[in-house]
Each structure stands twice: as C-alpha cells, then as structure tokens.
Image (cartoon, rainbow over all chains, first blue to last red; front, side, top):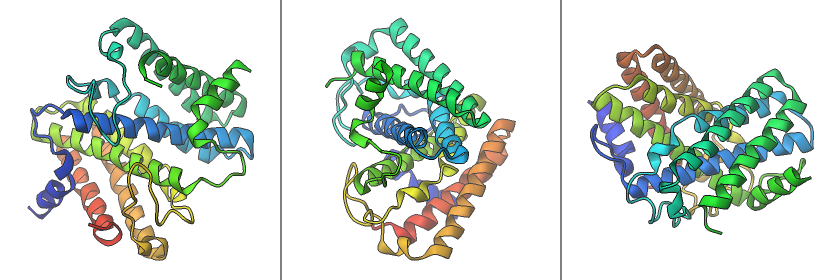
Length: 150
Length: 150
C-alpha cells in the first residue's frame, strides 16, 4: 500500500491507467527527453573520439543510445501530438505522421546504426565506433532535415 | 568531411571538445531529459502491470531504464549546475552535491533495483517485475524527498 502511494505520487504528472492513451503533452515531453538523452550520448562519444578514448564511458553512452533507439518511440507520436508543448513546443512537421514508409526507413536505418555502434563500443573498437557514430549522426540529420522545423 | 559537417551541425547546441567540461546548462538539460525518459519507462511498465501485460513492451521500457541508471549520470552534476536552467530551472537541492555517501547509497540502491527490474522483464516474470518496479519507485522517491525541491 505504501509502495502504491509512492508510485502514485511519482507518476502523478504522467499517470497512465492501463487502457489510457498517452496524453499528447506527455508524449511530446517524453520524446523531447529521449532525443535529448541520445544527444547526451552522442556528445559523450564525440568527446571520446576527439580526446582520450575511454571504453567504459563510450559503452555506457552507446548502451543508452541503443536502448532508446529500440524502445519503440513511435508510440509517442500519438494523435494530437503533431502540435503542442512538452518541455517546449514540438518542432515535428505534419509529414512525419503521414510519410509512413519513408519514416520507417529512416527509423530502421537509425536502429541499425545504433545497434552497430553499441556492438563496436562493446568491442572497444574506436575505429568502428567512429564509423557507426557517423552513421547514427547521418540518420539523425536525415530525419531532422525532413521532419523537424528549423 | 561531409559527415564531420553533419555532426558539427547536430552537436552545435551541445558541442564538447575533447577536454571541455560539460556546460552547466547542458548538464541540467540532459539530466532532466534522462529522468523524464526514465519516467516514461516507469509509466509504460505501470500501464502493463495494471492492464494487459506485454513482455516486449515491458522489456523495452526496462532496458531504457537500466541503461540510463548505469550511464554514470553523476557526471552531469558538474560544478555550477546546482543552479540554473536546462529545459526548466533545476530543482536540485545543494545537499546533493555535498552528501556524497548518502547520495551514493541511494544511487547504488537505484542501480541495483533497475538491474533487477531489467532481469525480471527479460524473464517475462510479471510478479518479479512488479516487485522490482516498486523497489525502483522507492529509490526515486527517496532521492526526490531529500534532494529535490517541491
């Protein structure tokens, strides 16, 4: 009971009943957060590639990136979340909600690159990390170019 | 070269040179983002526990939580990030920066619970997921109570 109260309090701002749809404002905030968390990972890996390479640091960052890439973020593009505010106003373009196959292709390329990056990070192969890091960055840019306002 | 330009553009708002310290405003934004992303995971798992249990959905959410829990977020509590704004003003209390052992204990309990949650999720054991989910929630609350302003 105590735990239930704790959890109710914790989730108060984002309460989901079992059948409840994710609210657009939560969906926008969570996706902005997930992208920013991945941006932290990218910045960490970049710093390692440019400076002293720390295998464990890169692996931690790549693991976060991979987990989020494979988390099913598509579920956060709920109806009504094409406009609105999470932390800030969403910058998503309407086309993201209608360009199914094209969006799916970018998402697939991104997942593949993120998985390869994590594999290279686990192996401690800085050269392969650099290649995969650039591949991930390319897929980020591809989506931003087409589906995010400037 | 093209990839380098792409990455430079991508990381423009959070550029890190190899030796550069993480900027307080980036650190605050990234930690707010990482916590919100974990809150998404907690909400997903909660929805599964309350409704129809989908092993894959729970596993994706638990994997994200675990990856972030083990990512070394302590590195985001850089000097100067006790005050300031990421997405919003930080709510961290000054004591978090000085209560080393106590903060370390909470962080350790949190990591342990997040790892157990991921293990239970991989096994598809809803009962164990519920137990670990509540343990994770307890460690979140413990830290919020002591180190986050209301």
